[in-house]
Length: 84
Image 1 (cartoon, rainbow, N blue to C red):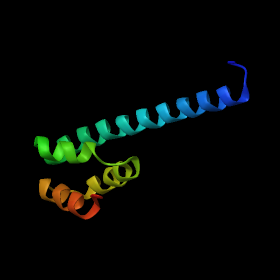
Image 2 (tube, one colour):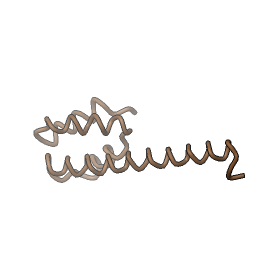
Image 3 (tube, rainbow, N blue to C red):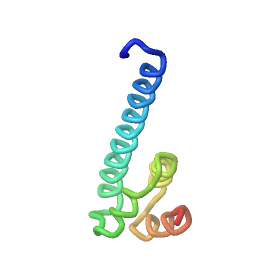
């Protein structure tokens, strides 16, 4: 059974999905650390909003935060980029 093509495909898909989730989580943690350093400690509400972002949104936020001057910039970015 472990040698079947279907099994190998499912296994590879599961591994890929796990890696993707791991990258997304690591990206979120990195962006949260950078935000805390750039704009100060985030309230729980903002942290929760950042944690809800997709990988593409996290990548975009990671670039955008380089231009942030304060927490208001993060709030504005989230308002403009959150998919409800």
